[in-house]
Image (cartoon, rainbow, N blue to C red; front, side):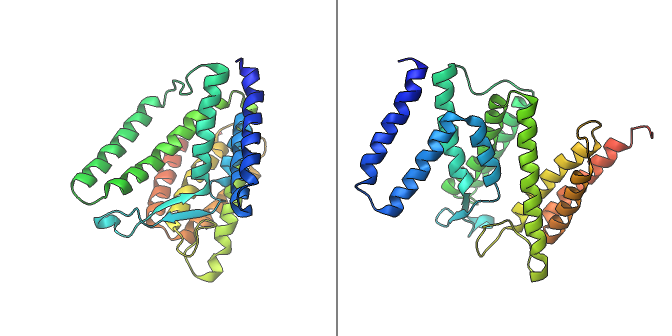
Length: 279
């Protein structure tokens, strides 16, 4: 069957199977199935739209703590935290690979200058996990899922590299990421009057400020890079406001590890500015 025929046949087959399943299931479970199939179709029809959905669900989606998968030693009591975007990325990723195989027939993992460092990082993380398992400090299942979450973002990188082909598409994803960063920063600032450490939205009763702090440091590095790059943006005022909001949100986390990472960011900025001649 030709690829165009598959594009028509696959949704029709899914619609028929879904209709039969819904009439024989309870309403709540049927609704979950409908939402899941909707995401599948969205990912198959438009990879760009599914990427936007991933961006908006990164820190603005609920999370689930799998308490049974805990580590040993220093990781005792730590469950595996899964967010909605983790499940969404798995669904979109598998559909994207299938779409690549059907429509293009090429490899989804393109060669880039970061392939080598990425593989080295993933190998180092896997080796560290293996050492922890062999020494008894980490349970195998717990270590595997923590390592898998690292690999998840590597997979997302390759998906974006393959799916984004124009400067306008890249600009749209960056703007969406900056909008989410601003909203998350406002959410963190709004928690300051409570006297508690700020954490990301929808993290339940036991939030993780370090996660929010790491995210804000990463996003601030991108924003500062855009501010310092000549010609990157026409108006720097929105980015400066985002730097201010993100910095306040970062301080509200009281995360020492994030503060250390922010210090490295500041030193990097100083090292970037110092060699430049004053205008």
